[in-house]
Length: 625
Ligand SMILES: *[C@@H]1O[C@H](CO)[C@@H](O)[C@H](O)[C@H]1NC(C)=O
Ligand SMILES: *[C@@H]1O[C@H](CO)[C@@H](O)[C@H](O)[C@H]1NC(C)=O
Ligand SMILES: *[C@@H]1O[C@H](CO)[C@@H](O)[C@H](O)[C@H]1NC(C)=O
Ligand SMILES: *[C@@H]1O[C@H](CO)[C@@H](O)[C@H](O)[C@H]1NC(C)=O
Ligand SMILES: *[C@@H]1O[C@H](CO)[C@@H](O)[C@H](O)[C@H]1NC(C)=O
Ligand SMILES: *[C@@H]1O[C@H](CO)[C@@H](O)[C@H](O)[C@H]1NC(C)=O
Ligand SMILES: *[C@@H]1O[C@H](CO)[C@@H](O)[C@H](O)[C@H]1NC(C)=O
Ligand SMILES: *[C@@H]1O[C@H](CO)[C@@H](O)[C@H](O)[C@H]1NC(C)=O
Picture: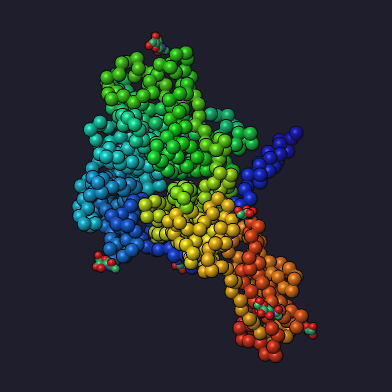
């Protein structure tokens, strides 16, 4: 086989694989834009390359870091919103005047929420400060050195965690790069670093693995993507890993691992379908959904591959721990795997020299971490997802469902239900008026709000916004949104007692819904003059439904224009009089969406003629496309 044929064959193989993977319902069921749902808007003064988001002091409020400024946005009462210009003094003292370009790269709540820890970048002179808050007002900020804490560049992603009095960071230590690693600052146990790696690395997430029964055993997990050292042309250029360090670690002795982690272990995160040779090796984002027991806590990881496809793989903390506790060490011989300690110790400085040497020499595990669910990705898609967030929703009879939020390249967010067989995309939310790049997302599970930021705006999305699914029980149940349910009169925020069927969206549950839930389609009567051009329209709310028109027992297909199912009447005549119904059929359930009765009359209504002009425009538009 020639080379080009082989390549073609490979491409066809991929396309077939991809087709097989594209699940039946890979489209969002409904699309909600600002005109259909209530999204709350807050503009950021200026234009920003980055958005650091942190829960604010009140419900419906968040802190937003941006270019030179820190904002407090209050979505309930905008007169309580504030902004402050950060690092003005540092700007004044700057070596090169006129280059004061600070971007905020880190915002943490510290000291029980009474202070903020804020860091900013200036190309090569990052700076951090502790800001005291008094009654929600920004106070003065006392400056700290930011070496190895905050990124040098506004585009450098460096996740960090402030736990108690300890700060864990992953920023680059050197302007030129290559100094990425987990570091700990402040606190009683002192500063600990990672020995710099020669290969290019980017940290994507940091999480606590705990609290465990013995707090001494609590660990920090870092999720990282690094350039592969494998020079083989078919090898993936990137590999993704999870790295652990013990919270209790205080480093080694003067001769071995001084001020470096003695508990650092690393393993690969696998995401793909081995038998189809489909691998996702570039980690884009991770989010952790904590469970009552740390072992059941789940890591939702978003990956991409060289084909630009996306996959979400789900891992448990228990599975990660299993590999770190039991796998052999890579390139180890004989008894090392049994001897090398994997437990966190009270005082790592007191460890015997032999043990420390092993800790230095053996850090990489032989086994990889594999995802839940038969080791396959939970979702595979061609959509350009960029961020992932996960929420747990308690529904009817205390059943729990997981909902994922995946940001898209055009400013939209997919709300996805996690279910056993395949993901169900409940809705595409389009909070922004224009296409835009989503910089960051913050989920506030306690109040069920999602914040989404662009370069100029931050939007608040109420996850309990259920009215937009429709005004009938069937529509509410078909939506399969765990945040919503039918309370007998409307689709409303779920509290556990509503009518709902998240698993199947089976509308038969509505039969006992009472007369308010009974669906009666709207009906309109039009008088149309003979020979007139005319059209009827029916909104196509669900992309999972098939729509058609029915007239005197005859089925007429839709003309689909901008999510409307249209029926064109080229030349009105007496035979075309009568009742028309637009029927939506979805998963074995049929219902009449709208009904019209057409009558011929000597004189047409004005409405009819203006509509016909509109349809001419629409049809021309469609033909031109
Ligand atoms: C935006 O910033 C400008 C200049 O810093 C300031 O004069 C203006 O009041 C700010 N606008 C708002 C809404 O804060
Ligand atoms: C909004 O906040 C301002 C300033 O704190 C306060 O005076 C006002 O009463 C608040 N309005 C409402 C509706 O809460
Ligand atoms: C760092 O470098 C070491 C040795 O060069 C290598 O074994 C390891 O895989 C690299 N990456 C990480 C994340 O440890
Ligand atoms: C492993 O530990 C045993 C007993 O503690 C010791 O005899 C042996 O030499 C150790 N092996 C290595 C490779 O360190
Ligand atoms: C959306 O785009 C239009 C045209 O490009 C522009 O005039 C308008 O200001 C934009 N709106 C927002 C909210 O950015
Ligand atoms: C819906 O539920 C009813 C009653 O449980 C059942 O008879 C019917 O087959 C279900 N329909 C679908 C489409 O699953
Ligand atoms: C509409 O139908 C009538 C009668 O069937 C016919 O006379 C007329 O020419 C038609 N008009 C158009 C525009 O086709
Ligand atoms: C259209 O339907 C309505 C209500 O179902 C009925 O009253 C009416 O007689 C029907 N019209 C025709 C022409 O069938």
